[in-house]
Amino acid sequence: MKVVFDDRTDIFLNVDYNSIRNYYTVSALSLDNSLLGQMTFKVSKDSYIRKIWLYKIETFSDNQHKGIGSKMLKYLENFARQNQIYYIEGKYFPENEFAKDFYEHRGYLIEKDGYDTLVCKSLSKDDEIYKAQQSLQQQI
Image 1: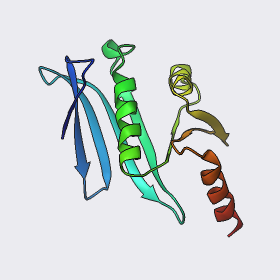
Image 2: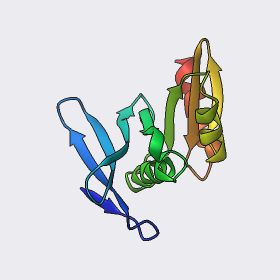
Image 3: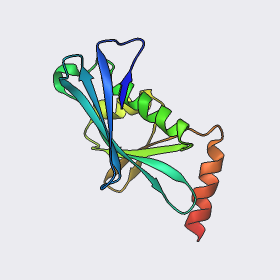
């Protein structure tokens, strides 16, 4: 599937689904099909809630700070909403200050879980629903 943007006519996203591994790859491409960045994610379901696990999002060095990562993340959030998924999470290397700023600037919470640094964002109108579901799941 090809996704184009009204405000950026020089890039588009190509979205592929791998049914064997059950994950999506989103490639940001220029008009000449040069790869500018990539994102991979998976839709999962635990006992109570469907959520997206973001494996990676990256823009290649000469394309950073041009809004490409933001476009991919915006696509991910729209995909989630359209599929009635209200929670996104992933992780990044704690040494990566740029990633921390990138996620925080876009409304993601940063949480430490041992060595791992997690990012998460609730897309629900009522974040308390998710927190209640998580609490209930931990009690079981």
